[in-house]
Amino acid sequence: MVACEFNIDFTQPAKELLRKLETKISTQGGTLTGNETSGSIHVPIMGSHISGTYTIAGQSINLQIDHKPFFISCDQIQGVLMGNI
Image 1 (cartoon, rainbow, N blue to C red):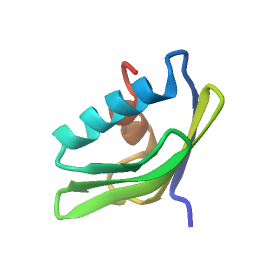
Image 2: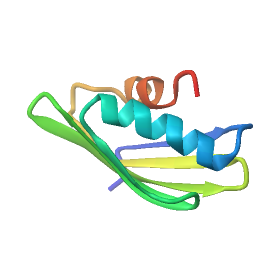
Image 3: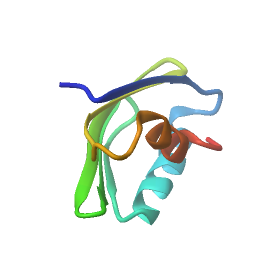
Image 4: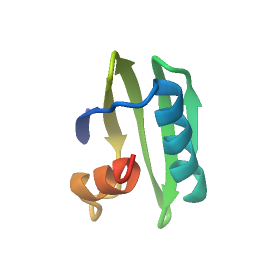
């Protein structure tokens, strides 16, 4: 079951987008694994976690969050992960 789904267009090379996203995730104690076409994310948070997958096609990234704490909104996740990217 998908808890949240985001489709976000970007202009920089996919490798640069992933580098920025990985930095954001790692500063939260999480991990990003994968490559320039697909992968997964996992971020521990308040005794729980946020996890999901991503796919990249052209200049668009699709993030599917399959697990999140109920008290964290999809908008908050999108803002933290994709803000300023």
